[in-house]
Length: 498
Image (cartoon, rainbow, N blue to C red):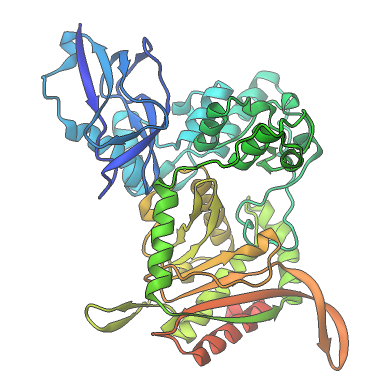
């Protein structure tokens, strides 16, 4: 037998260190080459680290939550001399494997998984497969390039259960979209009686690795944390739920939001939360944008009764095709149509060359709230896709952002961004531009509000709009004209057909 050390590989371009989020193995565990041994979070993504050897875990050199520089030894393997290979087994091989998991295009990842038998799946899908007793290699991925999602794992588990029982599988729990929300139009949460009960009554608790780490640090049983939020019909616990439960000592069945009010006097006067990783990257980007581009925000409101009716009419057809038609899909089409009329809003200011780059392609970023902070997946080539295709892609990208499996390429090359604070009940805001873009549009809550029609006050569905622009590039008049165009397309969605 021989001891082989494994160093943290370069898990992404420009990344010098990573936080070891969780170990997937313990000392003494037997592993095979390609098995996932750890999850590492960088300032760009959450990536899986695979084993390079067949053997047993001899020693773990880092604690969960520890910041580890690239090139530091994180794990030692006890391997057979014959299987160990040369003393200087190629580090590049490990680097390529991790890089593939985090950053390659889906097609390349799929090809790699076909070639060596590995499966392209995010940490959440692998963990769910273990919980459900599903062999991840047997799951057919429906994502780009054959990527396996959480939904694929559940579908496979349901199919196996159906085969064993000979009964027809029960349909998924119904979800509802709040009237006010276009964002979390991507993956709208729904409140169910089952989810609001005691955690002990749940069969399963969904939570991202960062939330589970916080629960472990606070000595909280994550399955006992009450929550009214669900994802795909199952209880979903956030970091805030865990902290409120820990601070308030909520009783089983008591809503997590009430826990904060029942906090005891034993809690510390102040607490600290690390400012690093993706949270710090987001902060740096926000500061750069705010202090570089002079922001001006234009506010307006779109009347969208026809859009609400059109979506309601098309929902059933979309569901028959396996899609969930959201307002956000319509908004993307309307924004893209308006960008074609006012291309200066689909631009970038190149200060070094002294030119404004007008983009003739339409990659729309959608801000998604996650436990790690605001992330912006980008829907590429919106003008070339239909409503159902956009709806599916929006939902997939938002899910990837939330479970931290999204890649850098899926968050790059945006030309315009949409942020949806309406999902949380807001109406107007002054969003910060996603630099180096020159504009961002914020969406308020869709509600029935009083409007004046032919001198009479009536109730109509309206959508508040907040457009922030880089005033170095875009004038106020152009901002108003662009917003008017968006309003026109949303008010009469049939115009999008032209």
